[in-house]
Length: 232
Image 1 (cartoon, rainbow, N blue to C red):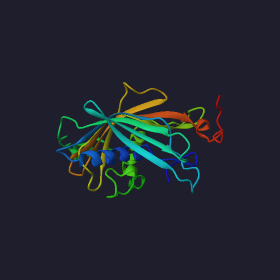
Image 2: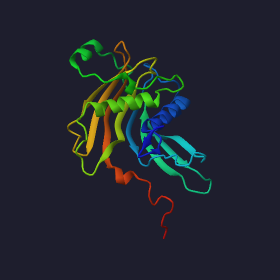
Image 3: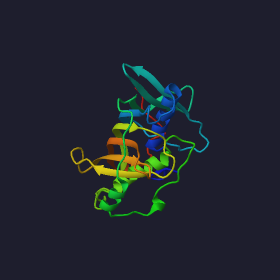
Image 4: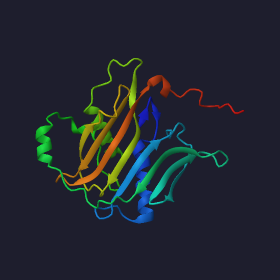
């Protein structure tokens, strides 16, 4: 299970998979001739699974907005309570129909630091872009960045949002990820990256710009005072 401070939470990539599914339902399959672009992705609230038997209702919606579509994800556990907003994004079909290829052999030669493959997840054909595999691309950015040892108080960098994500086709096997840090958008407690996801032959499957991780103290992640709220 995906956890933060021992609390099970839906990965941010799970919300993106809902966006892919909603787009395919409305517009058909995502492929090189009809790719998908997401931009201004924002995560407003985590979706925690604190009660194993709780029934959570999810609502993923697409609404037309000029030449784009507004995408939202809401949830609630009871029909009487208001919907909680978790994720927003703008979806559209980009003008470019193909992303081309990259020279993977040259990248392997230039980037000599290697990480154990057990840190990455297996592929799954049940998803368009398997969330754990997509999450592994995000984690590769942290591997390329200096560690957080020495931060006081201690904490972790959490997936915060995306400027733009372009999807060209479904991965059919292993995925290679090439990540670059965006120094122009990064600070001590905020990291931003671009990454390119590729097939083993160098064919570009997805491109992501301005993906952000924000530092969060562990104390702020603990579930406290969550069983009540003050209403005036």
